[in-house]
Amino acid sequence: MKKIIPTESELEILQILWETQPLTVRAVHEELLKKREIGYTTTLKQFQRMTEKGMLKKIESGKAHEYKTLVKPKSIQKGMFDKFLNNVFNGSTSELLMHALGNSETSEEELKELEAFLEKKKKGK
Image (tube, rainbow, N blue to C red; front, side):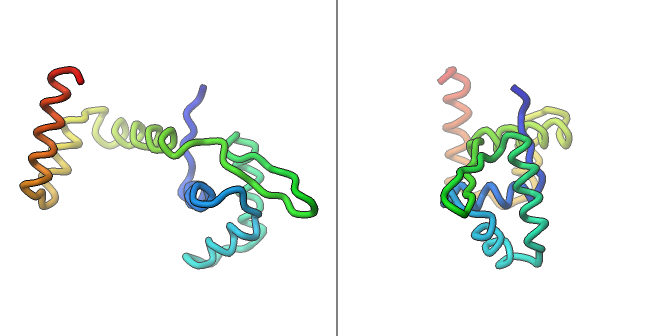
């Protein structure tokens, strides 16, 4: 099965639907308007494309059509993370971690959590 990597706009829609679904295009559009200007027909077209791509399913409910997601947050996160890791860090997890730790303040508690995580990984747990 091909990994689904949503666009930024598609991800916005998925995040709204993951919180409360099913929803109509109108309801999602109203949420999107709280963040930025977007035309209703643009939102509707995105829903149509996302349905074609297998991200959303249309549910007939009277006059209104509601939509629900067919993809789980974890699968989208994994696909997007894998793409980022490969494109930006040549697939190197250690380079990613060193970059993240070198470019931000890491607390003692976070370092201890990381050490514990690495110990578990070494032991194969």
